[in-house]
Length: 521
Image 1 (cartoon, rainbow, N blue to C red):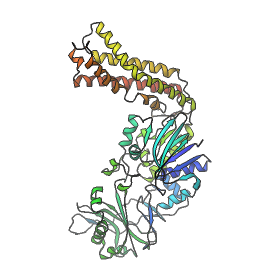
Image 2 (image 1 turned 90 degrees about the horizontal axis):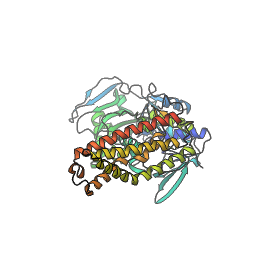
Image 3 (image 1 turned 180 degrees about the horizontal axis):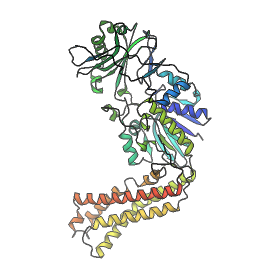
Image 4 (image 1 turned 45 degrees about the vertical axis):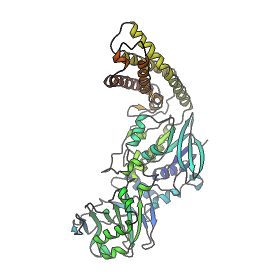
């Protein structure tokens, strides 16, 4: 059977595939687009004869060691971002420019000769074409005992691929929005995915090539900032090659996705007009290239249409854990514990996944044990209401008058949790390489997952029973509980759940823990 399926042909997926290829591992890489690179996108310019980056442009060696090493290992040539000479500012739409001085604004940023796509091409050269599957959009992932099944759509055709492990190197929000998971992922993970913005997904970028760098000839750096409400390009920068002979300017679009769509036909004219404002009439003659990432469904989710105000903190440990007994792992730059959102984060995520694939082998014994436990929990759902009814009648027979529903529900879930712990104690779990991250075993989430929605469903069933119960008709507080009473019950059951979850994790860690990973970053 295929060992690993990587879904997502961006930098994270490609770097991981190159590592697996070097080790002679069994894998395939699937990409939804017809090209590789993800958000790395360089397009050729006829005017300048160079590649223009419509995605990431820079890396910073002082803070991005992984990409600096990779560039060196691949033998790629890098050069410093041009940052000399005067910087221009435009505070008002009237076109009155001001000098902002000549201090560098890109803090030692580096670029690649041939554009950032040179990085993609160099990695792809290390991966046999037989390992790559393009135009394959992931629509569902299923856990099937000791394997996972991945469902892909290519045009109107559907296909299923099975593997021992799946690495989903897809932005978490896009994954949450577009891919069905069976069984459903736990609430904590789903919440983390939705709360993790896809960096630059809601943005747009323009690149304009020229026959010569006329702004440099005028003593200008090419850097400019427009801060008025009508600005089309909020930030402009020099995008020439290392020699400065192949000329281009780049800019980040300040308009919202809605405004960009409304002005879509006129965007080339608006971009030209602002460049002319900054650099004079020669800026009108450039060759334009434009990329609106908000229109890319494999990059931008619905939640990403409103970009964050600043660079998010990408260090949620929930996204860096392995799930489904080590069979399901998450990648993409946004899952990184360091450098999230940048290309550095994509490489950090790939390195972390590479470690996890080596450290967490699929364990068929644990898979079978987890399947047995899921089946047991499933059997408790219909029996829980009967347990509640027995508890309620017992309290009534002892002349209990207050908090009947609250006490009976709490007793029910606590009894079920106690029995669940006993069931877990009897499972033959093996933990030779089950990781513990921040005190939490990677086995804990799949053990707790079958209980998702258990308490809420039980409360709803109990309240329906109360409203139809003749025995409770003389207890109006129980017959038709107030919202405040119901909220109190929910808090009690939530507290019982937290205690149960902590106990489960403590027992699993004691039984199965491998040495704790000091750095999942």
